[in-house]
Length: 447
Ligand code: ARG
Image (cartoon, rainbow, N blue to C red; front, side, top):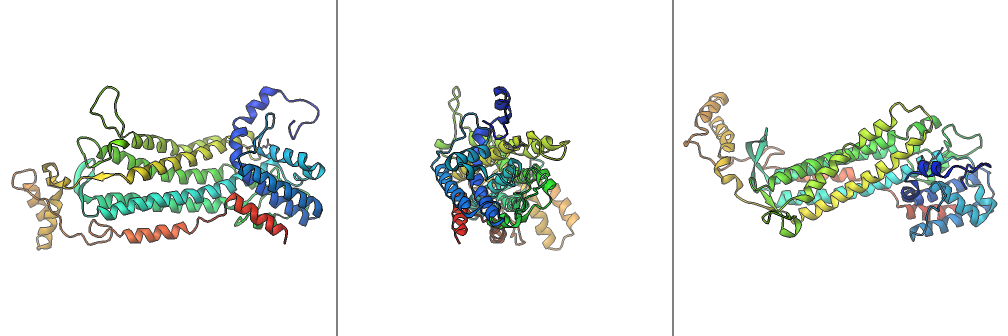
């Protein structure tokens, strides 16, 4: 029985096709749907749309449903379309008429908007914590190996002296930027669509400000029609933030694969962390980083997928918006898995010393030589020409660097400044878990 059934039994294959993966994926939204319903019930009573007893029995039943969800026992039954229908069905079978009142002044459209925003808010907070772990791992490697030189490249040609300190630290600063972008997306999604109903509001005297406060949103999404249009925009902001983190991870993985090759051998991992070949006994392959590279490259297509799905969509609710959910759920899951495995790998990375002593890298010290002449008073262009004449010939030999003192150079990485920027960014990511939020709502309802 569908919520919208009115005498005609819908064709089974149509229901199966239109439900799509909702019967599994929506379980991720279950807790948020229940918490949203708690806030809604509290509001309905304050607005005089249900009485005190009805509110109390709804909250009690919702509390029990939340417990069921927590135990993993809440399922979307066969024949039920989505989590919103399941929650209403359970309430109605537990409470009878009072259960049937929960849908007063709302639609599944504003429910799903609310659930997704609450889910994404918490998911960005968890992701930020995970990014923070990776950030720490990179910064501590940067500090530990700050004086181990590697060549820096431009055009894939050896260019100037760099260091593992600079290399590891660079990815950490990239993550600090990614965190800012994620914070921007989080701010945008932290507004309340509940009560905008199907996209045109309700003639009942609901109090949208109250549910905004109860669900700890920063503000309302005001215009009801925009709340519905915002589905796709909120996801685009979040997908762009995921793509930004993914870009950092993907490029880092590329370098890692390159630096592990027999030609480079800058870094290595213990045997247990590399993979082998079924035919070539000597192989030690960086499969982990290849898969991180591939998976994060796919995550970088997410904003394009969101844009493609929503371009040319007329305003108001349209059913394909439902497809956004899996894009976002899978994006977070994949990104977190990539971060987790990278942290583990980085905990075991080995770096080679004395890399730049090799003759191939002799010429990266030529700019140093130029600078030494410049410091002694020779005009830059003359010094450049003089050293250029020697480079590539037996007469040019150098393996040491000058003092690098300016901010962000190999002698002055400023990791602590970057850490301070990152720590400040982390301040934006604080929300309650779904269970903490439900507990807060239930205790507030009794006040
Ligand atoms: N499963 C739907 C979605 O995610 C829920 C909203 C259904 N609304 C509707 N009018 N069919 O979009």
